[in-house]
Image 1 (tube, rainbow, N blue to C red):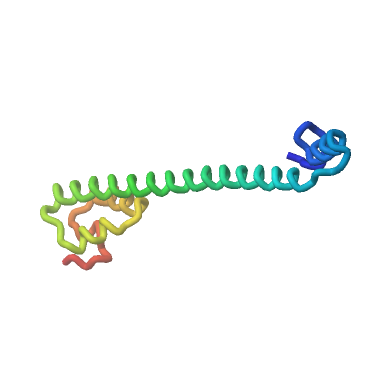
Image 2: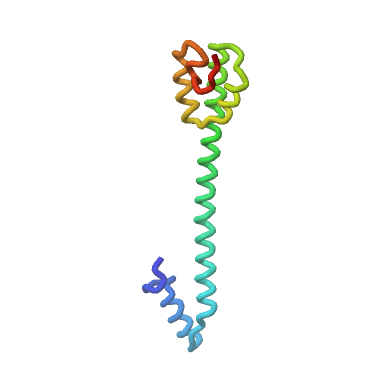
Length: 121
């Protein structure tokens, strides 16, 4: 909102109305009203941004947890009991990496082929 331009909520309109009603400028309450409006608007915007950020984080964590579970089940089904190092890797990997390893594990001949960086041989 342009507060100095004309209009029913503009600063100019508020000042002119207060001068017309009381015969003098009553700037203090107008300034306080503008500060209060700014605070309320800033708080609302902050809450919206915070909620969106929290939602995105929660969705990413949920996706990673689901992929971790699916990858664990697939690897156990294909290769048997998983070593601790594999389980640790799965619980700490980002969703994108879990997704890629899930795809790799579909055709892999061994667990070491899926996770070569763990030196499982």
